[in-house]
Length: 348
Image (cartoon, rainbow, N blue to C red; front, side, top):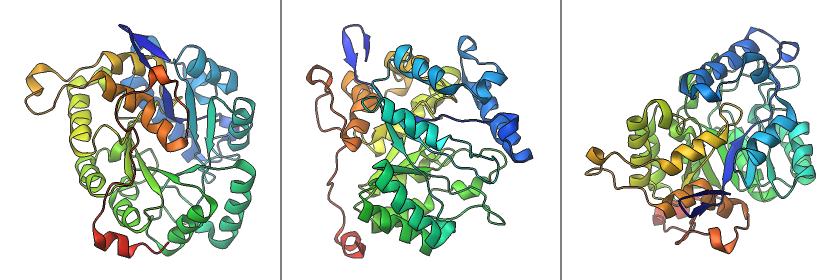
């Protein structure tokens, strides 16, 4: 919980990682390129006081994670977003079993979201069934630009990907987080294009598609899709740190998101350990649209910040919020009416 000027905020960090990018876990040069690119983001967008040394950044462990999120970082609940990258790292980038074990140890504070790759076809589908049963999954995180053998990515609307989405519906996995945004070396920018979200969001209304990084640098494409599709949400990870180095750019981003998506479909995420949540929360609560931009973008209210910082994600994951911390309105709204043609196209 965070409090400023008498206003209290329940915090759900919707995007955190427990990764191991140490040299001994790097399978090839691409493992080093990936963590180096992460570190460049960290160095270029963080306040100087929040910078980590490179060695710590490669591996920080669960004790540091717990402290940064729940002791220093004001976070009430956090959601792991798995990252496989098994072609780049021996045991994967995100540490699946360690992260899952941590959620079992702190079930009141942590939720684990898994990952799959539809290019593993039937074998991967069977593994997903086993994992969903063992891990009681509510969500998954997908990297459509992930390399697999000769393939350098896939689309959500490809046949095998559709089979996995249909299986998610059967298994009760409702929250589909997708990295759609900034390129990370050596992955390809166009493999993160948001266009395929449009098709599957229309076809699978039983699923929620949380577009992480709000499609940057394709914000406009994302906004047009998300305003049409009732089940598309925007995750602020990577967009929010611009609040420090480029506050007017961030004002434009959040202003566009509030205009197109509305206050109920935007989710806070620190992308820990790319950044720690403490300074992001502090700066967002203090943030306001600059006066000379308010003719185009309305000022952000305290209740809007409460929804973005926690209530919207809490609604998607069934996390209880103490009565005194609940914002007014209907966070994380669902059931928005869609066109008849879209309803008829849904095969589920």
